[in-house]
Length: 214
Image (tube, rainbow, N blue to C red; front, top):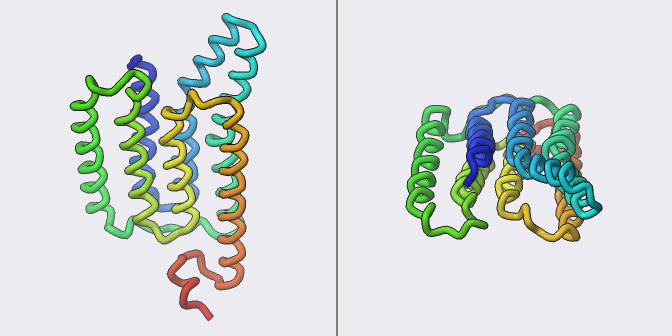
């Protein structure tokens, strides 16, 4: 694995881990945007270099498809969630496990995945060499979703989980990309719409209070 790829994935993993401790919805959205930007940076740069060197139609299409996916994950999806926050509240909370326990769990998750990744490093084929980082980001994203009651933070965690799979899906056919982006836009829009309407109905952002309100 090239050094620049390792740096980009390690940076994205760090932002995913930091999201576990984000107290405000706004900060969680920032970490989502930074994680997505780091995950797709290398692939975008490769496509840009190929475009500059090749200057042919296929390279141009590949670049615009990669840029559209990167821009959607790093800008569009976070902005949709941010819009939901502006129509509800910038909720402040901590992980359900507590900050200290969350830190211990994040470290344990990281160490277990890195240990397993080290043993598998020489066994995995080249096209799956990013799997250890992807698996770690996915686990941390699930941890974010499992330890929050704020639905906007949970939605941000869901987007982080989807971003974690990007390195494994980077070579997907171009025809699949519009479908994937359209699906994620639809999921985020519907989720934010439901959250905003529930907030207006019950006057609370916590999911547990929706259940008992009224």
